[in-house]
Picture 1: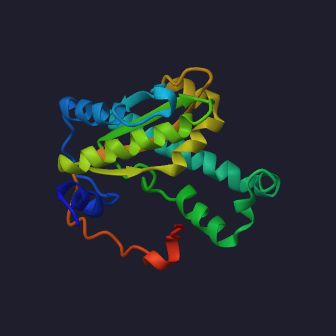
Picture 2 (picture 1 turned 90 degrees about the vertical axis):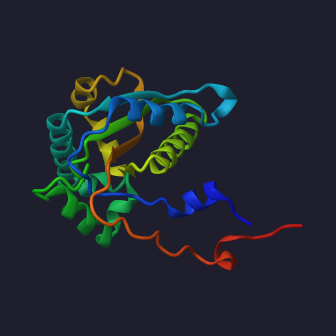
Length: 203
């Protein structure tokens, strides 16, 4: 049992290579509107959006993310008490590859970057995650590629950077998503885990 929407969900995948063509403001507005219609705890709609389409600013933010990652690695013996993941050697090598890359493998030179920001309140992050998924699905339906950038959250460790992009005091980055017209062949989504490994039926 399926329909066109379910098929679209199955076909969507993260895009990390973008065409130089800029995204029209109207397209980004439509994508954000889809996000605003996501479910939210107690209908609080706790999200705000910061939309960046200046490629120089996006490139600069990419450099700052890499700098923050470098700082984390330099202080990893202290930070590992806060981030237990830093005890994982494979993860450390992964972080180092991103932190010291000369290319933009953070935001992938995308023409648009959207921060979904919120405050520290119960279920606000979960609500923003629903919002982000709506936006990525909407983008896919319009022929726009997207990718959720988890490393962007390290920008929250630097108040000056947060201020520079207009993130108010008391807010944090719940999601950072890049958008753009895909470049080249996107390919198919990877095979999902089998049902027996991830589903437990009760009743």
